[in-house]
Image (cartoon, rainbow, N blue to C red):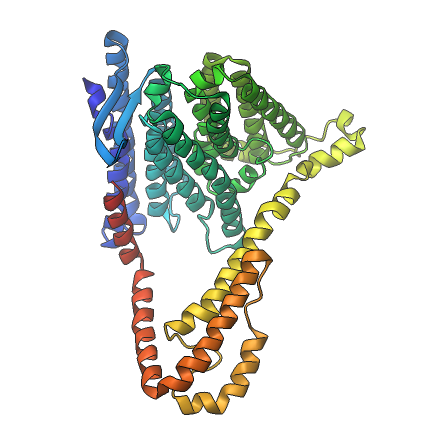
Length: 518
């Protein structure tokens, strides 16, 4: 059975990305001369994945879908077991074909579009890893493997939004998108955990076999976790604002991530839960409500847009909202075909956008006259219903405050414990500390950790206690020998940190991490 080789679909792009990265590190495909080599490797891997799924499709027409394919055992702990498995039913085969085709076309388009870009190789590495992640999301036989692909796709999204990381706006937007999507990850992890606990398994096929013997409340909580993940990933109300910030990346990444593939991941997740949703009318109604709110948000916000990509993205959000409505009503097959057709059409729109912008020689379309008559609605549309401001208040500011507290704690406590000197002064002996302690105290007080909220206040208190412990019990009683030892350890740790920050060592650590996980 050709289905037994389905693991080649995510594996081939990963191997191509690894080869491009290693070749770049060792200087074989750098600069403009290396673009041809990179392009051939990326195109070949993508084309091979497409041929692989087409062969499986042909076989499925005559012999039926392969179904569940278990490659090997991954983890076992007591009665809990996680396999490296794949589930190839009709839905998975159709979507895998769609992903393979769009990925191949996007890579071919990107070869000329990204020509002479400084980070040409980096772009294709991330694009190939993303393709592998999407293959994994759709073909995974269990929820954990789906989660692995889900997370890899999110990281690739972050990296391509911050493609021009030397500019502050792309970096800030990438962080905003990354933080928002972590909310959905909490829901996905909760759904997996509850499935383990109450269902006793995480295999998709067992859900389709109808082995569900759980209460309504348990079903609500499991589906609720997955629904939260789906709403965030597909940019549904009220999490829609992140997708407009994601357009900072290059146009090909906007096409494959937010126009055609990744934005539909939430719809796919809901389609996978069809047997559970059919028995749960309450959550189906909630899905309809969120879908309708997203349609209203996307439609009115799209009416006031004056650039092509923003108009496309609000149209995308609106259509995906309609898919959620169809799922809530119970039209699962219609929603699946709608997903496929919309992904193809929207990929064409985004890839065609650069040519369209060059061809247009007239002003952007005006706002509809009827909308301007309703001042409140017009203002709300221009402000995108203030969802960005709400997200800033509820998500961004608390996260920024927490990051500031953690950074201050690291500078004031961790750096001093490892002997890393402050920028303002350096203690070379106990005598110099005694001589300058008044100055140091005033400096410390001026730059003491200032906490925000409960966690920040705890950090501030802990920093003060550790600073007192260091000054009163260590520096005063340890003498110069202890100070010299602490400083030497700090110097070596600093050297190790500098080495780990270099790309080649970072790549080695990431590779070792993946090997350990797999």
